Length: 306
Ligand code: HEM
Image (cartoon, rainbow, N blue to C red):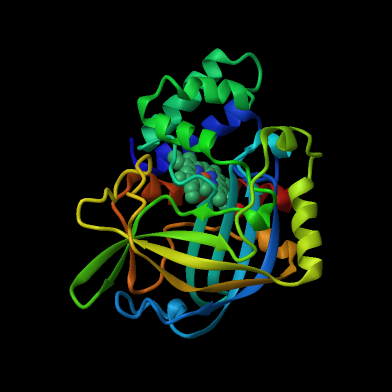
């Protein structure tokens, strides 16, 4: 099946499994959006000429989200949160760095992703909940790394308290060299988790209020780290984490300044990178581009009709 048909199929499959919510993203449906500034540290100069990481400032648009495709799910039912950042844009060269609070994904190919959704649909009566999903993933060997990771980590105590991983590898390219990297957004406030009890008792919309309250005190800051891959580290499999002793570097700091609902209309395509950066061969990363486009076109058309 070609990439575009497969992307449409995956988005259809999400809708058939979780329901259709006009005007919303087909995954990570509920979120909150902001504007800010990214200040490059200059530390990437050794590997890439990407303009965004040079010393200096660039505009940033940010969206935090709950992973569920159903915007009515309680916050606790989406233990994995998302942070999508677009640096530049608005006529300037665009670089998207999209992360989630898990270091690995549950499927190594688009085909497995669709298969998992199909199995979910066939066994769940009505729409599946988090527990059905977790139970099903146990039957897919490649999903175990994500299940283990989710068991080990705690849901963050707020959108501003999570560690967000790009999961996929990219390459910094320059002067005949290709340095594999993965990105991590690290909160300057520190990573803070919630116990299962605390998570279960949260009211719906807790995370949205948390970041609003936090931002009322002062700007929210995240450091952008890169993990530097070594020759045998897998660059094509989002179910595999790199060893924890890999070197890291700080590429700069994101300062989140104010809420901006207009950012919700953006498309955070993780394959849009700047000159000096390339996408890895990871089939899930490459497939996300047409899948996100399909979701973007559907939600934009629905908003136009409302
Ligand atoms: C087969 C793989 C995947 C599929 C089919 C998929 C599907 C989707 C779709 C349809 C959207 C909504 C896009 C939009 O309307 O703009 C979305 C959003 C999102 N996805 Fe994925 N996704 C996949 C893998 C991943 C992975 C590996 C990550 C890890 C970083 C991820 C993180 C996110 C985040 C953070 C958002 C919200 C972006 C925003 O705020 O605009 N996804 N996904």
